Amino acid sequence: MNAPAHKPVSWWKPTGAHSEAELDRMLLGPAILQSLIRPECVLDGDYARELAETKRFVERWRADADFRETLKQNAAATSRLHLFRFDPEELRPIWDVSQQPLNISPRLERFRYWLFEKIWRREQTRLKYCEPEDPRHRRWRERQMRRLSGELGARSHESIVHAPVAIELSEGCSVGCWFCGVSAKKKGGDFRYEGTSIALWQDVLQVLKAKIGETASSSFLYWASDPLDNPDYEKFALDFSKVLGRFPQTTTAIAHRDVERTRRLLNTSMAHGCRINRFSILSLGQFNRVMESFSPLELLHCEIVSQNLESNQQQSSAGRALNHERLEKSAIRKGADPLAWEAAPGTIACVSGFLLNMVTRSLRLITPCPADARWPDGYRVLDSGRFENGRDLEQEMERMMSHHMRLEPERNHPQRFRKGLGFSVIEEGFVLSGKGTRSEFNAAPKAAEALRFLGGSLCAGSLSLNELTVEIEARFGLSSEWTKRQLQSCFDGGFLDDEPVGDEDSLSAEIAHHD
Image (cartoon, rainbow, N blue to C red; front, side, top):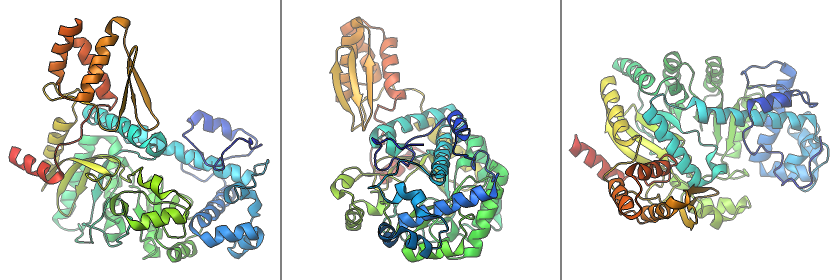
């Protein structure tokens, strides 16, 4: 297999999701590939061990600046020093972008195929396994996905799955990362698996199953918290698996604190249907300890997210990292443009749905957004409430869904395009542009002027749907149904502004007053 000369330096990385049919066709190619994700099994132990060793090499390359540098000077000696038993030339396109060979090694091709499968699985999770059954939640989530794609750009947005629920089993976090994208507070109490808490937990799971459906199994048990902070995390996760059908995915920054506990967790999670777990690495010393404690095969289905100073991976500009001087220094060290990074705020939030905290018995309706002064943690809070039992939770979820997850635009409130959209007039109507996106709204010649007027009115944002129907009928003789259809198209596409008015505190006060 030859590498085309016009490919960018990161050509070996997958750039998008393949269809399952395409992946199957690749299996029949000359590289002798195997699937280790569809289904989740190891058909050939030698194949899996080779892939795991390749993965570990790439993880070392990402995390360790000295390793990256010495590879260029003496690849064979450096590789042997770190106990890699294969020729690093097989992976040269990864670690030496200046000399891309024409022939791609089978080892690299197998690694690329595994990455393709992982991205396919993530895309399936986003489009299928996280889709709520309730049409209100489903269509609201779809609108948030379209909105965020235009705000972040498709390339950044494709990694966000928009899970339906996240549940915190602790209050705060013991780790205290300077770059925490959701600004986790200092560690407080834990929700323990004992007494009446067990019954409450069972009730919560049943409510989620009823309100979300089968895809509630794609939820996870952490947010601004580390799951392993809670001594009973595994017990809660096993109940989650029994009720919802799959052990939740775990992301932890303290996998090294109790290695045997972590090892048991990895084994248990995979045995109960978990697709993948993640270790967040905060220092090179922690990385080395994790590598020493777990074999490559044990971590084949565990992503290593290197957040340490020596890593070539950049933190997201959200939460504590937003406008933090260490983010700029980190960007410079890693060769990024800090001004460009600052101009494109990010998010690590990945839920368009409900955020529960079992310690405080709180419930919030949230959705990701680019971090900014109003939403520095990279997600909007649309509503908040409390619960003491399963019945409370069900009622609060229903109230939030009824109020926020409408199937059509409100009739009596001013309608406007969301901020950040570019608007331009064309002969057939108008064009809306976002970050790497462009959407045309066209009408027949007799209605084009009315469509341009509608677009201009939505830019001004002063007229309600009812007022727009009256105005367009009077000016252009078009029926109210025509106007409603055009506005519905803008609404479904995520182009209309649905950002909550006021800050979270005033929103909570308004809710309490309404109740």
